[in-house]
Amino acid sequence: MGIVETIALSMGAAWGSGINLYAAVFTLGFLHNSESITLPPDLVILASPLVMFAAGLMYLVEFFADKIPGIDTIWDTIHTFIRIPAGAVLAAGAVGELGAGAELAAALIGGSLAAATHATKAGTRAVVNASPEPFSNWGLSIAEDIAVFAGVWAAVQHPWIFLGLLILFIVFMAWLLPKIWRGIRKVFRWLFRSQATETRDQPAERPPPAAAPEPTAQAPPENKPPD
Image 1: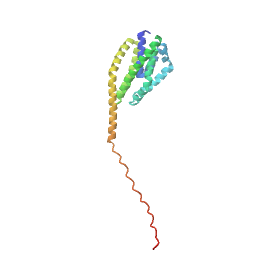
Image 2: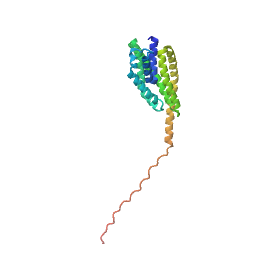
Image 3: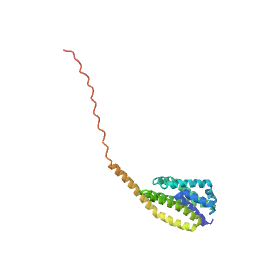
């Protein structure tokens, strides 16, 4: 595997991990087992039947969780601590044969790329969830899955094309992320404003009427003896 192919594989694995880690892992394992590519020694473990089964199972779980507004945001939040480190590890494993320095550099760049793609996905999904209809969420989720399968395949089959598209994608993320952040701020402001309006419109509860004081028992008059 040449240097361009190695870089494309490293960045493709990191890029795909930030969007859908399990789809990226399953695709790499499948391509190796089908003899479409030969994975580097540090990534051959991805072709293990147990690893592929686990990746396929978790992909199915994510496939359905990703289609439910609100649940997908929780899922993405949890996977902040999974996708980014996994992207760094996969990127480093792809260049393991080039030495420790290359591994560290790939881990830093791959982790940053996985973080950027994860932030783009999670932020976009949080903004789209503000829409009351579910179809935009479903369409976006399916498009993400297709993009990961096609992108990882392109990274190993057409590395030059993938690297060119990756540069364009990075430029697109740099343009999109500030807009996503502004959109998320607007959503939160709308939520807080709606909550404040609902609280203000609720009628104030009247205090319960005070209980009437109970009559005190008076002592009977004492019978005084006549003078």
